[in-house]
Length: 432
Image 1 (cartoon, rainbow, N blue to C red):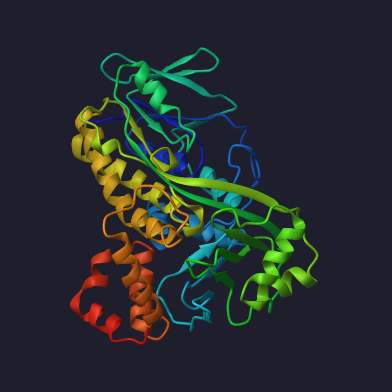
Image 2: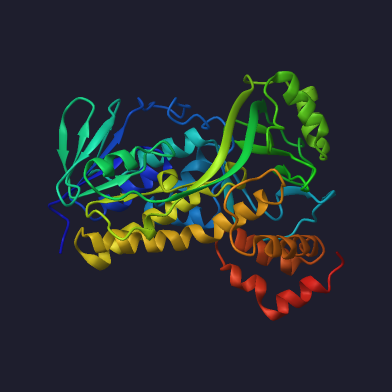
């Protein structure tokens, strides 16, 4: 069956919504992208993305998925001033009390601001995507299936498929309940994360032997993290973050946090450079995973993507990548089924669960290394955390382990490679 004469609606014009709209536009005759914010004509932060002024990273798998959907977007980012980098060579990582050696990871990423990424993706939407901003969705319509969305203006848009990318605050439980459909169970891992970010001018030599710096704490008694991220306009995004309430709330706390970080580039830059912005603070109380794949009844005509499906601890930088991969899988499932059915939704959520399994386990593993973290623990997470600590220490000495771990972390390789006999042997025989 062809979707050429059919209409799809996407709710939310963040990265998940843009990726979903692009995937659907290659299959449906018409796509309407609904965004309650007023979208800026230039790369600017906006109210609907409260974390938009903070650092954002695309993992390698996410960059590849968005490149498939938006050909040339990474080159366009670089042309606009974004910074290409190798996460093994150019990202200086300080962890376990040491600066990790540089190693060629074979991965080529791009560092940018969130507003530039969204602007670049919006510019590359297919021509059959209509963007309607400044309007909100108030509910769904349908009987036995979802067949439309109701706008806050009272207008109803008839549609064959609704892709809900409205974020962590999605109202889908209420919307689906009003139509008599079951809503999914959810799990929350309470992390008490917060981070403060300030923008500074960037010049050559600010960071020795690299393009960026990431300082990660050693749990269970250290909580502070920091990130120096180069972005367009010859600027730095300087982030001070922490778990369980230890993050700074103001300018004085930000400066103290910089001094407490182990890599000297943080305190040096903040101490001598004139800031280009105020200190922006964002809090993130808990990660949340919604288990749509466990429902015994799915409404035809409705799917969720991005933070409406799973909201990760942002310090790990996994959310945008998972959203891009989900959009690609949605397109693949549409191609396979050829019709917008409940079976399509069921298979999509099964595939999305596969995408989320590894990053959720990585994030939960890191978060449960802190004793204050609460919530449902993934099975065997304490055992896996012990092996992960041993492996990370081994990666500081063995470039092969480091490169393999980086590729798993960037969702390029499956985590099973970390448990092959040769890898386990190398990890266990390494110095703790």
